[in-house]
Amino acid sequence: MDKPTDNLMTEPQVPKGSYDLRILQALRRIIRAVDIHSHKLSTQHKITGPQLACLTVVEEEGPSTSSNLAKRVYLSPSTVVGIIDRLEEKRLVERNRSRVDRRQVHISITPQGRQLIADAPSLLQDTLANALVELPEIEQVSITLALEKLVDLMEARHIGAAPLLETGSLNREK
Image (cartoon, rainbow, N blue to C red):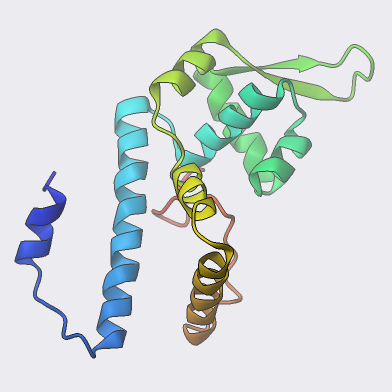
């Protein structure tokens, strides 16, 4: 992988007044950062961003139902069930039926799941969230409003997007 400065030297300079090109270049860098992080998770740790997010919540909060987990990671319950299936296949979580209410199934992390969390890099959204809280609130508001305005300018408000940072095929497994 190129060093960050290598890419900057080979990219053509965007003129200062070309805001459209500068915005597109910034968006492209953001998308690329998400792709690189997702690829690193997938190749080095054999896990996707949403899988790691679910695993992290189960580790932090203890056994949880899939519907509670879905609320915590901002994904649909059906998507979370698929994620839990794959995490269970990898022996990172296990399902246990509740002794109090047999209709409920609780997802628990395994020792292998704890080890994976210890070895994996933090979620990209955690890194971003930690950096954002360090900014003054006025900057947080400014960034939020500017990005929401971009969404509107691109007529993309109708596109659903969970606040988990991952890219790739729209049809691939989550």
